[in-house]
Structure formats: C-alpha cells, structure tokens
Image 1 (cartoon, rainbow, N blue to C red):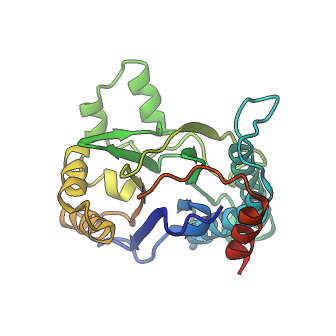
Image 2: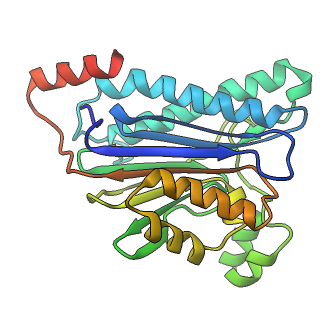
Length: 277
C-alpha cells in the first residue's frame, strides 16, 4: 500500500554548537509510511558510521520485506503483526552489520547506535527502539512519550531512587543500557498502537530532549503544527538556543487520512510497483 498521500514525514538533523561532526542519522520512505532515526556513539567517527549503517540497513531491509507482507496477519509465537516482526528482523540485521564492521576495523571497535523505527500500516503503527532516542505522540493537545529510555538513569527512576525532575538535572542521563551494534545480539522493544489522522509523532535524539523539556516540545508542536517542516526547524533551533551541546535531530510524521489496507490484488500490485520505482 502506497501511503504517499496519506502520511507526511519530514525531519532535520544538525551538528549542534559543540560537536565537530554529526553522529545522528535520519531516513524515511513515505510510500511505506516508514521513518528511522539513529544516534551513534564511538570514537574516530565510529558513531557517525554506526548510525548511518543502522538507518541504511533498516531502510533497505524493510523496502524488500514489507511489500511482501499480507497486512492483517500476526506472528503465531509472539502475537505481533508481521510488520513488527519485519522491523525487528531489520534491526537485528543492522546490529549484525555494525557489530561485524566494528570487529573488522579497529578504529570502529565498540561503536554502536540508538535507533527508533516508526511504521504506519492499516490505520495502525509499530514503534521499535533501542537506546535513549525517543518517540513522542501529540494527540489533540497532549504530548506523550511512547518509548522508555534504555538508560541507567531511567532504571533508577523506575526504582524510585530519582524523580523525573532530578533525572533531568543529572549528569549521567546518557549512560545507555542497550545499543545497536555493540554486541552480537540486541534486545528490541516493540509497541503496536492505533494511529489517528492528525496525530503528530516526533522521533528525536537526546540532543533535543536533553536541551529542552517536554513542556517546550509540546508548546512548539502546538504552535507550528500546521507545518511540520517548521516544527522540525523550530525544535532544532530551540535545542541550539538552550546550549546545543549535542547533535540534535527531529523527525516528524503525521497521518492526514485513514489508511486501511486494500484487499484488491490490482491495488496491491500498483502499490508494490510505486514503492520499487
């Protein structure tokens, strides 16, 4: 199913004011309703390599696997949709590609990346993530964080040892407990939900939410929601105005129409050729 006229996806990534290169990567395929964001880590530009490999591999794998899926079917073992299983497989492939690259090139040893993947299909969505890059949803007037950070600090918050306010001020907020490519295997969080027209989804690296709080993120989206490109530009500007200490990326998506799966085989073939072209 081609979602080009049903989903808006746009984004921006910026070096920030302190770093000398950008280790964030973003990518999208509007026809598939697919968006990917990664925030790399590692010396000698290893993070830049890791995030690019993650985005490129995930997009490439899903462009091959998603058009072959018959929407509406679920995996018999996990209960997740076949679309979710395809995303998980793509992230695992990216993990292996990055891990092998780090093993074969000493200057990239230990490199890794966070990742967030968002996919729309059949009036639904799947979000998969590893690390502390986030997905937010703005539904009507309310902003909600849909992902849970894989960080040591988040674990301490969950145990009641820190409040959210204390965590925001902590100097150790970026110690991730999961990353893509660091080990031979990776643990991935999957979430499925319904997607409503005019919901706005924000994927961001921690260079955004570390610099500005959720209240300012919410205000910015509400103030510029008629133009998602302006939302992305303003969010990046706000992060830089508040210090810009890290690379900052904002990738936004919004369904503008319902997008239930088509049943006709002619429509499916048309959509398949539209995506491959």
